[in-house]
Amino acid sequence: MIDNEIYQLSNVYTQQNYNRFIQMNKQEVDDMKSLLTFSRELIVKYDDAVPERGKIQYSRKEGAADIDTEQH
Image 1 (cartoon, rainbow, N blue to C red):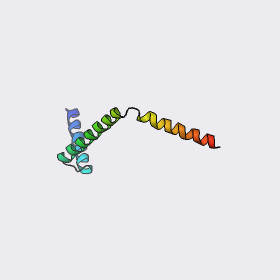
Image 2 (cartoon, rainbow, N blue to C red; image 1 turned 60 degrees about the vertical axis):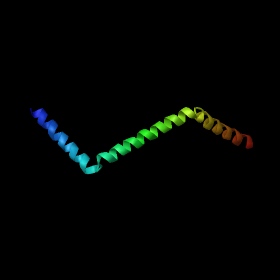
Image 3 (cartoon, one colour; image 1 turned 120 degrees about the vertical axis):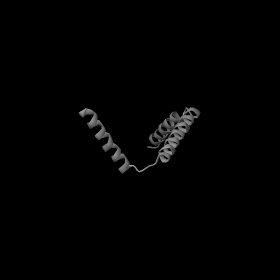
Image 4 (cartoon, rainbow, N blue to C red; image 1 turned 45 degrees about the horizontal axis):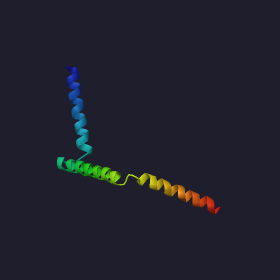
């Protein structure tokens, strides 16, 4: 019984904190979730379309390092 009361009180306190610090309505939260989901899907599609992207950047850095050592 006491545990249940403590749980309810802590839940109310937590909900009050959320309401005080984060003043958003449900539509705003849903919009943010949609935007994050859409952005994640775009990133995944881009990584699938350009699988060598990381290797190209690494090669360019190595090439720049080689040019610097040749000049000195």
